[in-house]
Length: 256
Ligand code: PEP
Image (cartoon, rainbow, N blue to C red; front, side, top):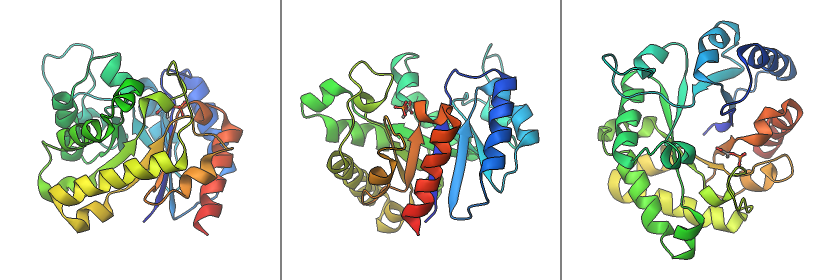
């Protein structure tokens, strides 16, 4: 299976800054066949960057989009409009869930809309600090995972990437504690067990599971070695070119 290194730029960089970053990143990277390097700029930068990018080296992801393909939905961008522009889309990021009130039902529709439009969904799931403290992690993971996949036909579930992002480990969260490899391994095991129970062993093995939460050059190697982890979703560190390149090179070393 490939390794996925995904940078989530969130609400950072003007279109010009994003273009300069991409230019430098393209120059810094060889073509790693077994690593998919993905960056997720703001929606406004996706189209110009899609003309600039060398897709053999780097792919583009949307950070969010709307599940209806057209219609009276002021201010939204549809997955159908991103077709051919973005190869991936982050869906259900905790900032979408907790700042913009997205629930599992809406997220499920977005996952299905992405697949319908040939965009690979990166479905983010993860418990908050208090859910973990109350022993609810397994339930939250199951609800968000199975809920998020509920609108996808069974034979399309293997088109999804899952990202485990404990909310308490994300650098912008109030607590931002670093997850230990053991904590991650336990939840990744749970994710695959749930996938196996609902969709069967083959699908459970085929779906890439990424980890995200304060990933940096200092911990990327350890996180990539966690059994069952197929890549990383990176916020803060992906904004610093040298750190992002360092993490990609770590991924390359970890694989070989
Ligand atoms: C994220 O927001 O998806 C994320 C993982 O951020 P950070 O790496 O900054 O914790």
